[in-house]
Length: 134
Image 1: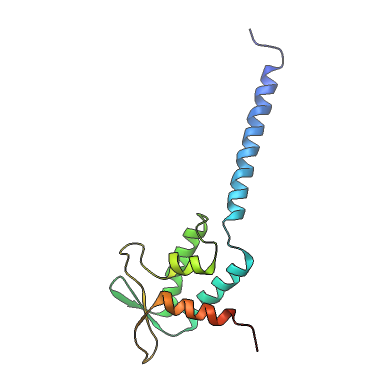
Image 2: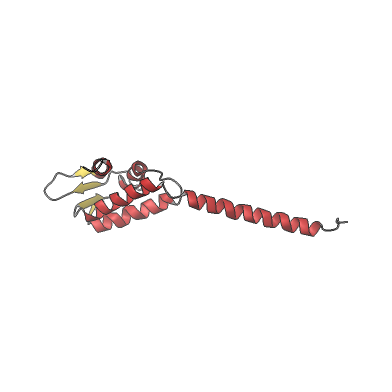
């Protein structure tokens, strides 16, 4: 025999559990974005990459700066949604430096400059960006 009002208690418990689950999902989504300063730096690095006019080597092929930005941005969004990017440095290391398929470093060639790895190239730009304005 069921106690009087037991259905209401079960319903309230189920509603409470659903609200708790929704809250946890919301908190998880809200945490996915890096801190504002890091997000600004990552945005700058993506802009720098896109406006560089350089060629990018990834997994055996050269790509334009526009294609490189689209690719790196897709990786960034994927990692950001998994709360894996918390700084510009982690963005460079996890999204912009090497192929997650082959493990090979991405390369960049700007004009007549030598071919260099993208990771150190972006870290140098990040250091320049962080300098105080004169």
